[in-house]
Length: 260
Image 1 (tube, one colour):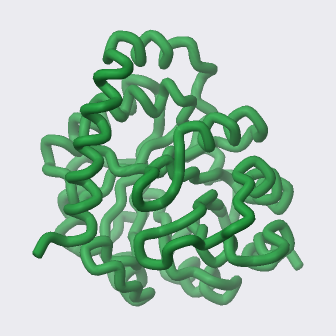
Image 2: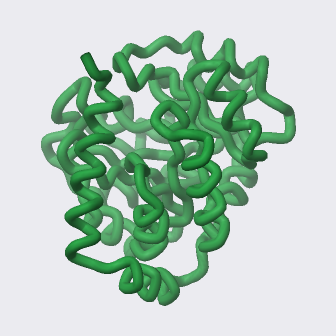
């Protein structure tokens, strides 16, 4: 039986094939070159402590619809007002009910650097991300070969974007470190089973070099969680679901950051 991640990525390959038929590689390269310069995702994270990557996410494979009254622009503005350092916007449609249009609408309404949160399976998507205005891409080591990760990272660098390498075990961390990343995220959610275990990030943190920006992802709900992971060496935190479920997102974000 294939894992959830494998299913998502197989479907993503079909999606990319359709996108290529609609818009050629040459077209998206031309569009990418018309975008404003990347806003500096990692540099923005380095300026705040704790540094929050606040996620705009309507749904997930494990929980279904997370927020019924979903207004991506209003949510992004609330995050920005509350002190988030960066934003993450889901663009995967089948599993997260995201769209590229959500990303571009948010991009036009805020000044924060933005991560395009999607499942990268083809070099086309890296350039497509810059064409959408992305400042950073996600590279999930669990579904990428070493060669793919290297190629995608080099391509992101060519277009001036940062990359968040995502790992969830020691083997994936070792593979990521071989590519000399500037930023590594530890996902406390196992994307093959969707189970969450905060101990995952706390354990892996001990193996991460001091010179890499460490990002904790998934399962973080309050300021105590942030402080626990800060003590383990994490400086940045990607949080979506726990904030998206709150009635007052701005107030909840301030509380998460310890600003209330």
